[in-house]
Length: 305
Image 1 (cartoon, rainbow, N blue to C red):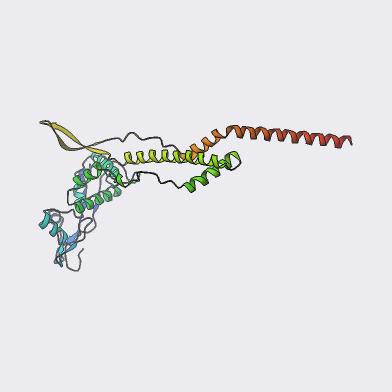
Image 2 (tube, rainbow, N blue to C red):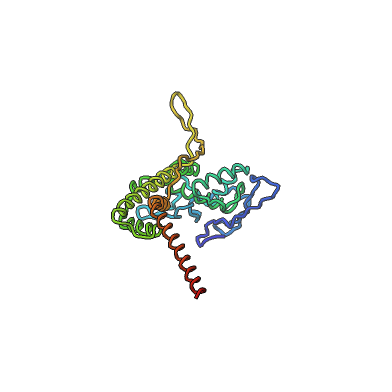
């Protein structure tokens, strides 16, 4: 397969996996053509290292970049300027083939999932399926953008907060018009009447406090959830902590049971108005009994003539 400039472009890559073979035995089937249109043999392909102007763009980067008004190959520019060699299509398969056990594949899948590259339920644990490969390619794109190897990029994602907690609101903005309407509707549905002005003031303050309590619980849980799931292991060397390069998974703790302000307010209204509700219930029962008696008496009169 070639483009109009007769540059080498690798054809479709397939993988054949024998059920009895290990992951290490997976081999690609590659077909390519040189600049003159001649078919490149398998041995030539295996030993061939594509140059940066091979017509293939690095993961997550454009093939060309404009520098000083001149188009330069992105890979050449990064190598010449920063000494960084980006990842190209094919490098993902090379890196993944180093995972020669199911456990090593499962380990990288867990990290890709924790980092947000891989979705739970979209992959088969321990197997290099398509979802895992696509997730790894996305990681390589981020590594290219960051200008570092994929291991460092993955470590950075896993050991840093998931989002900036400073963007979270530090206080609850209360809408007292909305609070007032909620109080009136709740009292009317529970007690059967609208609250008095004095009751409205008291209940609005109670509802505001319950909403503030719910907000603080949700805020605390959000801050805990934002913390990284991994930390870099350290050892003490000559009295100083030294990072080992290994990652250790941590389990967030301290999550609070967040109270539901609406449910708690309704319960509070029932508690405060229970005497009145009981009285209303007794009055209703008395009225019902009186109606039954009246109905019975009327029935007897009609029989007696």
